[in-house]
Image (cartoon, rainbow, N blue to C red; front, side, top):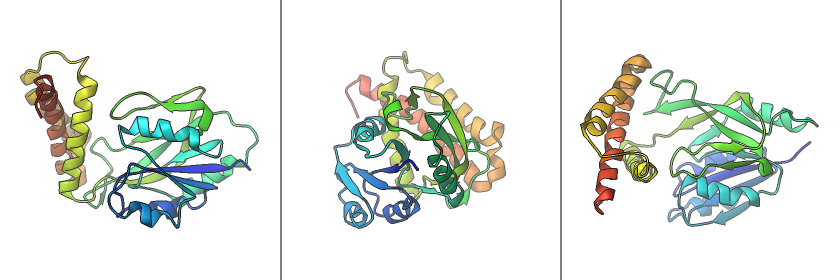
Length: 251
């Protein structure tokens, strides 16, 4: 049976760390990659983790690419602190690790999305997946500040088991996260977006709201669907506003 490293990136995740570490307890190595948390994350993780390594945070892709080669085992499962491995996913991964031959070098995993304490079935959150189970020496993340994908040296399969994902802790924390992402996305947009116009700060946010709430049936998720569509439209406006500010040397 091949051995598995569970890689957990953290940054001030004391409210999440114990549960996420318990959910990957079946791994042969639990590697916590901490960005110098100032809360109790490291203290709480120490009894449950195999190793804790620390590095100043630049962006998610850079942090993971730094950590991946340090994994002790060939197969890696990356689980963010706000995610949990379901029993079905655990059993599927353990079954794959028992196989001698693997047709894929990486596997996508679907996410059960939760927002404002509610399981979301629509709102563009249905069908979300990410490449999280992969061979250490065959995969790296692309160099992007936000939403970087895995670049795999080989074919990618899809698992049936899912990760439970709850990006929402409280409203202020969620908005703060959107604001951080907006700054990073503004930097990604710097070379490929021209002059900022009403198209970017009015029309695009409006269509983002309509996409989540109407086209992708967010209204069927009730008030949580409305709130999600609204904050996503806000996020679109904000990233272009921050790009406009960056170009003027402002924040």
